Amino acid sequence: MIDLLGYGAFFLTTALVFALISLGLNLQWGLTGLFNVGVAGFVAIGAYTSALLTTPEEAARFGGFDMPIVVGWLGAMLVAGIAAAITGFATLRLKSDYLAITTFGVAVVVQLVALNAQWLTGGAFGIGFIPRPFASLAEKPILFNLSNLAIVAVVTLVAYLALQHLTRSPWGRVLKALREDERAAISLGKSARFYRVQAFAVGGALMGLAGAVQAHFIGFIAPENYIPMLTFQVWVMLIVGGSGSNRGAVIGSVLVWAIWAGSGALTSVLFPAEQQARAAALQIVAIGVMLCVILLVRPNGLFGNLVERRRLAAGARKTVAQSSGPAT
Image 1 (spheres, one colour):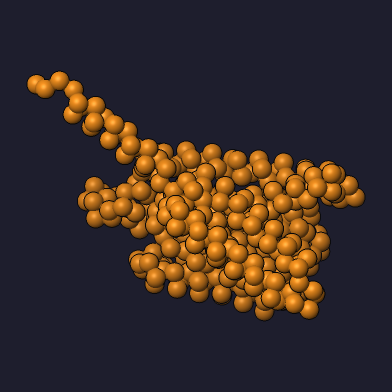
Image 2 (tube, rainbow, N blue to C red; image 1 turned 180 degrees about the vertical axis):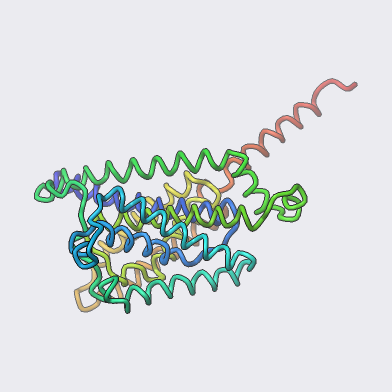
């Protein structure tokens, strides 16, 4: 029972880290319609930035830094946000598939830099001994995992509430207008490029924060942690939960990660060690089958366009009530 509680805390912590990334992607794609397939690159930027700012070994190598973890997280958001803003400013004139190819290229460049700039990132060996919150509780795994879960849950909740507020604000309504009808929004004096760069930067900052949180939770990062599979996982989480819904981004992340972790545990039991490559492939198959089933049953995801459906339903009820009233 105690081991199960510790694993449950570890599982939820990882799922909420993915939820942070999905919230950033939902702002970019679900709210603004920006097709970003370079998610892994911005997560990596945040992770390496925070690690370089806070890890004592890295601080000694560069002759400074050794900052608190919170400063590392803020630095990760800042650097990842700036990187996303620069990327957006240079590429957001592109549409759909062209933008996707460009952002994928950015992610590949980031991973190659992390792999080859050994003087900065440690190369293929990565960066270890990253400070971990509540490190003094590491000898008590349950308390350690529960404490980290509490921190990640608070960070995710704050990000969720902030995005909910932004979505309902005039700024969020402009982003929706640009997604639905760009020409109409521009005719009202709104700068499409200005608002899209802002949305891309805020989404990238959230991805960088998620990377930093995960780096400090695990205590080690390496370039292989930020392969395109990470981007695939996050996109599946958002699609399953429902693009355009912050609630869907969070619940979809927990659900998909549960299936991913569960299928991994099942295949490791069913297949011997020499067939683990086949087991890993079956994980992807399981996610693909789940995605197909959900899209067949609910094409917009579990919570996709929930607000719009409620608004349309209310409008339909009002129309029926008016049409059934006394004739004038």
